[in-house]
Image (cartoon, rainbow, N blue to C red):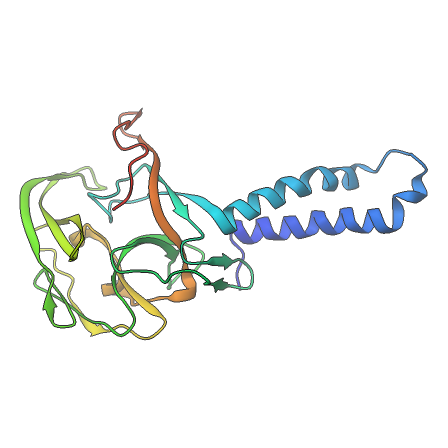
Length: 255
């Protein structure tokens, strides 16, 4: 159990509802038309607002801002993505539980989840390994259940670093699924290896920027109930350095 924005929103919804309900049941009739106290009037006004926002964020969609370059070239800093909260069911704040009446997370999905070492922090990565999978990442080669995941070299380009020093990366098209592919970055000298089996009820995730992503290779697997939703589309993209909108990225689907 922990309190983040969703938890605070849930708490405020319950609080304003309780105040309004208690007033309606025990005090409203006794006023004989007199004006409600400020606190009670505020609770009546804010309860439907809190309820509406809570329902939208919990059961339908939630925005998420990309804070780093770990998912480049798929997602870049300044992308604001729309997270589908109903794709895998609903995650409930406070009680820390995800009800899943729909479909399970799938290989290749880009997901937003609670960062296992610090659950108050949200992370975004791509699902590589499903429960029971044997995963090996060795010398920049990815193996799933002993099979090499194919990739095709596209070009060598520059990637911006947080320190302002661009460096060369190789861009590949990775064929994680027979009918789906995505782009990844790899850079010289950056090798984070891994070998292990994904436990039941957990997922193995990686960033598309393989040389600059702290992911399951470093801190382990993501529990199923930590997953908050699937990243569906880029709502808007803002380039903070040049102070302008990236119109070509706005509205694009996340593959």
